[in-house]
Length: 69
Image (cartoon, rainbow, N blue to C red; front, side):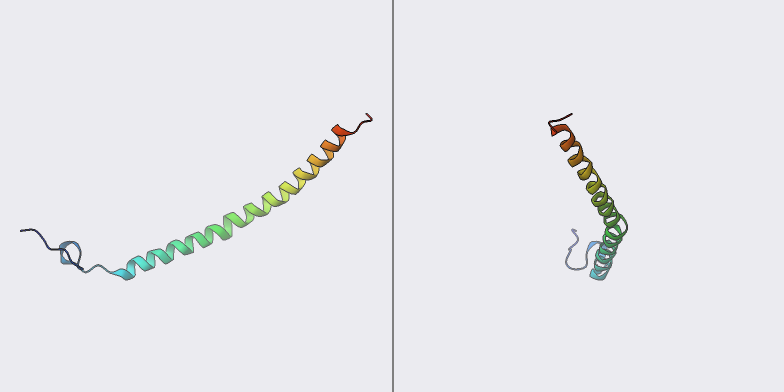
């Protein structure tokens, strides 16, 4: 006596598609919060720090390559 599985799922219960959509939407909101509160500030810090490091690199390279001590 094998159970027949059609659109009802396991045990004859009707599977709801709306629950999957809600979870998918919750994941999108979670990624949006992650992007907003973590990635954007991190990118801003890296941009500011990168500018400072590049300026330091250019000044050091100019001092090393300067022919007169």
